[in-house]
Length: 257
Image (cartoon, rainbow, N blue to C red; front, top):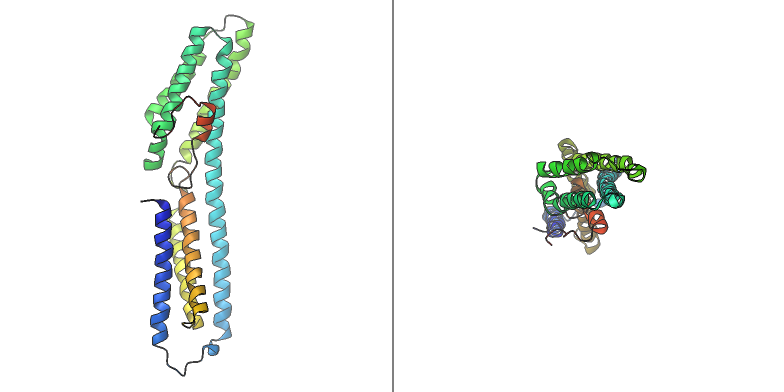
């Protein structure tokens, strides 16, 4: 099911539940009820709880967005390092250069076409990807430069392989969900409390009040969806992409290509 369809259903369901409760609750109120009798302390507490929950939502969104940005940056660093390895191999003999570039292409192809789906589905990297990167490392480190010109490229290439390995490790750390379960419990409980408190203000069945109640509940549902979508940097619709690999290695087929 599409993430956007999930969002639409969640927002519609939140609106429907809130509006249904408002209508049912309003039918039980007598004609002599005066909504202006709501104690000031209830209005104050409702406002304060809403402000506190808004701060919590803002921090949660900032946290998961930072995690997604870090995940995308690790992908960029990994792709750039491998591109440097492939480019710097130009000064080495043709057979060595061809072997290194073939190993780099094999690794990138595996990451884009296979490992990316594994990260999305299971939140982990593949053993084959680790083996392919190790092959790149061996192709670079096992060669002995024949002269000073070739030697000048040797250490930078070894360093770039190390950068790619480090970026891959960072990608592994970001592959799964980043938000702990206890935080999700607090976010959902806070949403229920915040939406539930609007009923203490004795809202009526006027179009304006029903519209505001529906929009408020839909906004809460949207913000929770936004946190959920960013929570797994590689696993959901608003996720990090393999575009850095595809941009630097345009001859590699993309996902589903």
